[in-house]
Amino acid sequence: MPIKKSGLTPYFFILPGVLILVSIIFFPLAYVAYLSFHGAAFLRPNMPFIGFQNYQGLLSRGAFWNAATVTTIFVSGTVVFAFLLGLVAAVALNRRVRGIWFFRLLIVLPYAVPVLASGIAWRLLLLTPFGMVDYMLRSLGLLSTGSSLLTAPPPLALLTVTMVNVWRYYPFVMLTLIAGLQAIPKELYEAAEMDGANSWRQFRHVALPLLMPIALIVLVILAIWNINAFTAVFVLTGGGPVRDTEAFALYIYRESFTNFEFGVGAANSMILLVVGLILVVLYTRAIKKGQSWT
Image (cartoon, rainbow, N blue to C red; front, side, top):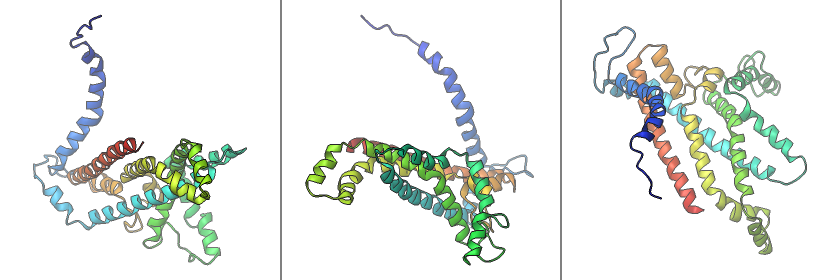
């Protein structure tokens, strides 16, 4: 039976979705790009065109390089430690024993808690004078009286914020890697065991190579999620002390809505967008590479 040409009818059905995408994604993005080339500020409502001056000015700002450094450390620490902790948890809980679901549920809880709620809870635990963690560290002589992990000099405050972020994201890694481990055929483990491989060698030579495609995807996803982290840092430290934990998204917020330098904030946003797009490209390549390995 010949298929009739439908003409423009299908396009009318997708038109509402396209209009929604344009209105909530592409239009704001185009406007931010427009602002980045103009001297947009609270005291300059006429917004004169200044070309690349906003971008050139960023290179001479110490706050810009500080935010870039903090974000790099924060994202790298989150990706590495969340992956390692998630991998250990996945291997430990990849058992078919009675009641294992309960321990999996306990580990998944941090990922189920909203970012704002977990940030407030950790702030209460870590901040003097009510913080239980701070009290225990002072009792052990590991922290001086009156100080706090969230207000400590660098790099302790940034390390603390990063570890809180690791606590939130490692359950996602665990769930993903458990799914990957359970997809590995048992026959491969049995063959390795017949060849004399112990548990460590089975993991190293059987499980780990087969987990590489999904592990690569997980690493890139963690980087994409945390490159624009704002809520956790804002709730825990607000970027302090003295901008020691001011991530890039928080820096953009302050430039735009505290200093009211909308053009500078827009230029920073476009740089962050480019970094995010690079990570998206790496993500798509990781997916293609994983498909080729399978």
